[in-house]
Each structure stands twice: as structure tokens, then as C-alpha cells.
Image (cartoon, rainbow, N blue to C red; front, side):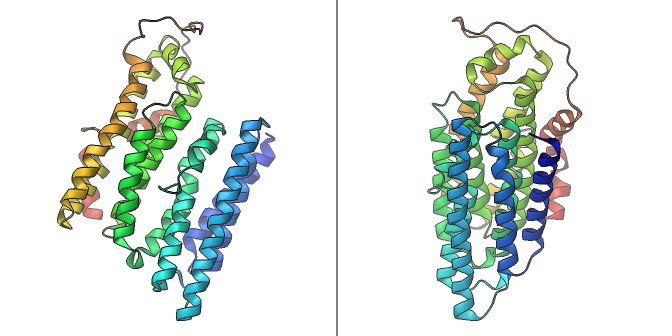
Length: 346
């Protein structure tokens, strides 16, 4: 892609995100979401491969439907209450429609079908944007309307997202699809707590973005898209593969890594809200995700499987690690000890 065009799309992405996050009126928030959608479409389809064109088409149709639902929800609320302010979404029907719209934007179950397919058809760098930056404006809208959302509906959708995200990722061989189902599962953890402690949702999203960015950039550096090519990456860059193992375990939520922090705080908050059964179900369902993270880690670092592969072994190259990968990986591993300070801020 032309560097000037790429710069325009990235700047449009920043502009759309800033407009949505700083707006009080539903129309400006909707305009920001539309700018984001239009900015990311060329980045998905830049390879001109049929799968990329298909992914861009699916993404456009789903986002257009979700944006229409956002407008419908805001107009319904304005019709009944006379308010266009985002924080004044008080009509119950409008809240339900908005929940469905934001779930489509994010890829929450049962509106998750598009996300793995779109991520599979996108390059790794675009996949990183789709998994992190694109989700920030919808999460912000949920944050601003959290007081009027339906907790039972969100709890149901969150538990289904965690279950399906873990279950569907078990049998995948394409790494981008595994990371898509991982994203769906993490969104379940964010959705269940948004009504009770919205700041905790934003903390979870920030830490998830850090860890996912580290994983995507590492995979992009190793030029790996499938499990059977990940198997041979150890010979190419052993140090990067070793750090990749720890980043995956952090994404799975194992202590004493950073990924354990949001899960710990969310389970603690659910226990305070007398939602012990939901917290137990989430903890057990997260074991499904742990399985495919360990599968990725096994293929990347621990040992080569006993059968031969059709891929040539790579030469060992002492290629310097990108500084952004080093910083993101460090943050993905060592933030747990400062959790008392984070809890104080919350």
C-alpha cells in the first residue's frame, strides 16, 4: 500500500476514535464510528486476494447494520425522552437495541460470526487494529451508557462469549482464527463487569490490548500464520519464541503475569455483587482458552512434534527484536506487582 494512503487511513482511524470518545451527542458518536469503518476497509482489502475482498465485504455489511441500529436506538430514545445526550439513554427499548448494536460492533456472541472470518482474511497488522483499536469506540459507548444497560442480558451474552470463544478455538489450525476466538472470550470478561464496575472494563481492555499487540507483532516478525509454520519458528528465532511463550501464558491469565490481574479483579468484583455462580462458570470456561494457548506455546517453543513437516527448517538469524515488541512484551509480563496501585486508582 502507498505510504501516503496508509498515513491517511491511520490518521482517519485516530480521528474517528477521538470523535466518538469525546462526543456527547449520538450523531457525532455515530459519525466517528463511520469514519473508523471507512478507514479500516482499505486496510483489510489491500492485498486484493479474494479472501481479503470477502473479509472487507463482510466487515462493511456488519458494521453498516450495527451503525444503523445505533442510530435507531438513539432516535427511539430521543422520541420518548427528548434527549440526544449519550449519557441520558434511559428508555429500556433503546438500551436493548444499543446493546445489540455494540455487540455487533465488538463481535460478542451471538453476533460473533463475522469476526473470525474477517480476521482470517486480513493481514496481521490489520488484524491487530481490528482486535484492539477498532474496539475502543464501541467499548467507550458502553462505558458511557453502563448505568442504563440490562445486567441480565449482558451476563448471558458474556458467559456465552467466554464459552464459545474457548470452545471454537480448540480445533483451529489458523493462528488468526485462534486469536479471533481469544478476543471473543476476552470480550465476555469485559461485558459481564461493565454494569457493576465500568472502570474495570476499561482496565481489562487496556491490558488485553497490550498483550494482543505483543502477540500480533511477534507473529508478524516471525512471519507465521499457521500452526505448522509456527512449529519451525524455533530454529529461526529462539529468543523471540521463548518470550512469545510467556506472552501467550499472560494472555491466558496465568499468575504471576499481567493477564492474571484483570481476571482476578473481575472475579473479586463479581463475588462482591453476589454473582458467585457466574464467577465460577467463567473461571472454569477460561480453561478452554488456556488449552489452545498452551497448544500455541507448545508448537512455538517447547519441542518439535515427533512427525516430520512439509516445511523447510529456517536458518537461525540474529535479527534484532523490534523495540515495540520488547516494550509490549515487558508490559505483558510484569504489571501484576503494581496491582495495589492500579486498584487504588480504580
